[in-house]
Length: 598
Image (cartoon, rainbow, N blue to C red; front, side, top):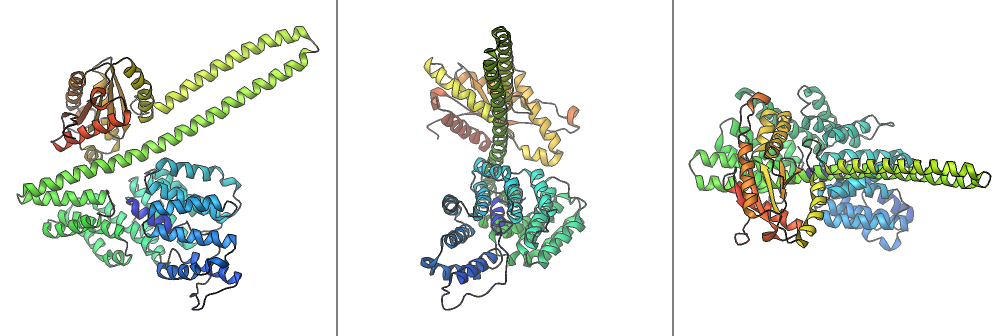
């Protein structure tokens, strides 16, 4: 459960290692080197230590910066790569991306371009540009067979498991990590350590790691023996977190506490705030379960302070939950509500980000499918053109045969055209349909609205719009499993569709978030229909289908084009704002967007 800043550091400290051989690291001379081969050697040494000795790496860059006038073109590209790398390592992600993009453009003939593309794919994902990350990764993977340098091929595979980890595509991350582990020749210890760490983190996220204590201990030992403490502790905190979720008794929780306590010094020695925040948040949860509430609060506050610069994360949510529970238990309801509100807002933003990742992945894959279909269609059309050409030649010899074949060709063209149109409809439907609920996905909703909004505006018809979100859906997944969670999503859509309102169109925006579009409808229409949906969802019987008895509820935000205008972005924003108000006011309700309150 790495937060994205940890992955960013992993990106910079992992298999994004240069394809160059790593030699013995030397201190830069006091007097500046001047010969070209000495500059090459210093560049190679600096590249070799960029993942293991940041202090010496910075000193070497300072030395190299004074030699820039003597650089060859290739040396300049290598130096720029190392400088952009340093910029990213200090946390200036956007600036680092711009530098790498410039290097990719200027240094096209160099192997460093593969390194740059790999880092860009990871940093696009870090900065929230998920589609760019996947596009960049797909571009590299599509050319993998043309890369003869084995170390560069290894680099692409390593980049793949990092990007897929960031996009929560855990099975793909596991599979590419396994490719690196099985790679021949055997990867360097740093690359092998990183691959093993991501393999087992993926298994943890897939809930397939219950009996892997020995294997994970072996990976931790291997990484530590090779000086890769950051990797080791990254896997370690994920493993301890997983063990805490499995702990059912006070004795089991105490054992998890001892595991984390014994690792505390090693975690702190990494000096990376991200992983330290993870540790503090984890300790707060453990101490809370052990009923050591005052100590839990101290660790939760420490974790919360650390997340100020790290943004929304599961660790922040966990820390806020500990603080809310504590202040509620002592009767300080004002402070408790403050933490509850912050936790709810953080959850909304955190899970919205997860949904964006899923939608980006689905969109890229649908686009790839469309491109494959387009190529297939063009090939069919080319075959028809070749046939036409052959017929034209033969027509000189036999006009009667030409007439016959021309008729056959027309029939063939009509048939192929029919098949192409049919296939286009199928692929368009695939790209716009949510596979689980059989309603529009986010792309389908966007395409539908881009047609409907101008049409309705021209006819002066009002479109009513709503976004609704299942309340505490994560809790259902955590307590009853993802199979039950999937059933809840499908049951929710079916409950709403049973209301049979012919002007209503449904879409799944991602995860547990949905939209309702109502043509030629007033604010009162959407308000009444949303209330019926809310009631229908709350009335869903869960025990018969799932074997568990629990309530399902949803919070709704509504608006219309009279309020928000005929602009999809504004409709989404305003309905989302009203949804937040429903969440803040206690959930399971319908709230109308009000420009004045906004």
